[in-house]
Image 1 (cartoon, rainbow over the protein chains, first blue to last red):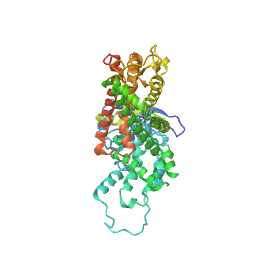
Image 2: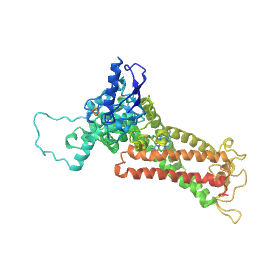
Image 3: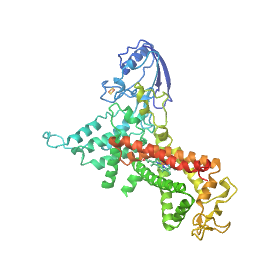
Image 4: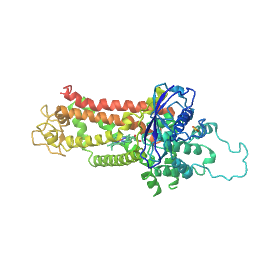
Length: 250
Length: 262
Ligand code: HEM
Ligand code: FES
């Protein structure tokens, strides 16, 4: 199949950037979206051009590195699918495909389709962890966890931190990401000692990084490759309220 | 106090304030509509209702100050949050939203109501000011008719068949603000005969209901009360309430303009 690609090209963070147009021929329908970009890059390199820079790592939908907005939708809009798992058979020969980086003030463009997502790392570092004494392995089943809580915690823990929620939100809000991280740990016994401190600190860091806030449009949940439910945002709103009432201060 | 600063300076805290002030204003909107609908029970009913309301004295002032406070908090939070949101997403996508699963598009694109909350809100605020100037301060220059609503008063006690309480108008120039019962019925029927006033009212309450169709469901989420099990019902409730309020509010000017209420 043949496609016309409109790809965002940007030398570095200070470059205003522009769209590069690429007419690509002989794309196999079984290629993944990233393989298609590799294929395009091979041609660009053969012509002595600058290949399109994009992030990827696992290419099996579990690391969250691949990050691109395909035709206005983060990851391209197949239900529960990352860009690396999206296949070219969903496109038709002759289509024009627009590829852009995540757009958020808190995710500045690094180069082409690569954005700097260290703001997510800083939110995690603010409280998205548990402090445990390491060294000895605890007994299995020493800490009972109700099945429902464990299931829900695992639903939240599926978040791979790709940032599609931020990219899709009209306010570039990181609420779904923070909600997943806060909920995941607040649902299990191991997360209890730091529960309030975590909620307050992570929300504070989220605001500081310049993410917007939730206006309940549901776009985040719709594009999330791990289908994290927007319910978790309601849970975060409860967790934060509970934390500031109980704790008062971080 | 850390609690206060955690509320005032965080995005989640500001959303709590927005939601709580929104609930308060919504409560007022419902009660106000029920009050307006007493006009359907005839002139005496609405005039008497208005007189009762005005006779509450200090309570009325507490309610007014409370409402003003909620409007202040709501607008303060709305402006701050909207500003932060704009800053957070300063560059828009060039590609039109076209997911490979086409049927999922409506889930990804935000609704009209959610995108225009700040505009519908600010227009409602401007309308509210006009509304108060029109029927509370009764500024004659803006009502579109030759008469001054300040001259519309009725008797509060009956005395024979010539003087029926809340129906018979006081002779011209006798009524005094704060002492006599206002002829609200005459004020409304005169005021809404002006077509542009009626249309402006209908558009404004339409915007209010669009605002609430999103706001009511957002409020449940902001307060952490929305869960998957209830999400559908909450959204239906928000939408249905929006339409009901629109019907209730718009019915008064429309009925008067079309002559259903003499
Ligand atoms: C009678 C008047 C009003 C009522 C009953 C009302 C009601 C509500 C409610 C219930 C919410 C949901 C709260 C939440 O987001 O959690 C809301 C949100 C909002 N309101 Fe109002 N409001 C009114 C006037 C205004 C005004 C005057 C403004 C303008 C400055 C405004 C701007 C907003 C904005 C920007 C939101 C946030 C929407 C979102 O989260 O997507 N509202 N309103
Ligand atoms: S490359 Fe790891 S999720 Fe796509």
